[in-house]
Image 1 (spheres, rainbow over the protein chains, first blue to last red):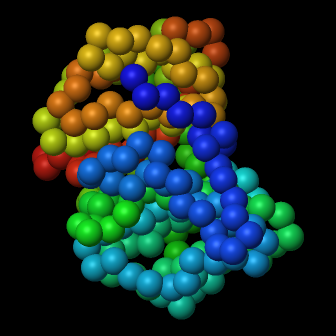
Image 2 (cartoon, chains in turn orange, red; image 1 turned 135 degrees about the horizontal axis):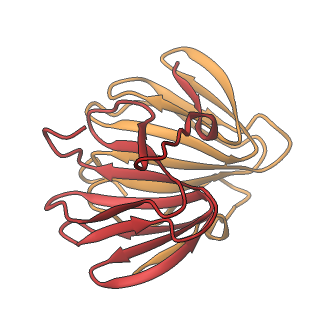
Length: 109
Length: 109
């Protein structure tokens, strides 16, 4: 059985935010996004996949279809299929977010 | 934007464990399983869907294809598509587990 201590899987880099695929599922992403202060994933959309952000540590600034909100550790939001969505660490602390997305878009990693 | 404070969504019942669907996604389950001491989800399998358990509070006893393990808060395991899997709260404290499963089997809730 593959067991992952989620927080221990986090890794950061100074040049860009990091995505850590925790299980390599073919059916969904179940990733950690690790953002240093100021880093971001710019707005984009997935035609057929829902994405859920669940903040584990820090405060994330999420924008979904033009609506912006701060999400604290312990809170989650969904970017429904087709929505334009982005995530930024506008704080001065590190940000760790669990990201589940399904179905996994083909050709992505 | 629908924001959920995940821990606040937990609910318990004395007669059986509770499943809370956090977002109602058509593409995946993103649920809280809330188990009082002694409660369990008995072993079962999903032919085409991966299920990930991420323990938020307490200690869960997971069995996947005959292998049993205790998973603590902060740890996650995957039950790959087709595997026989079950979850039990064998502790004396409440257990809260985030469960992501994709694709969402048709006809299920």
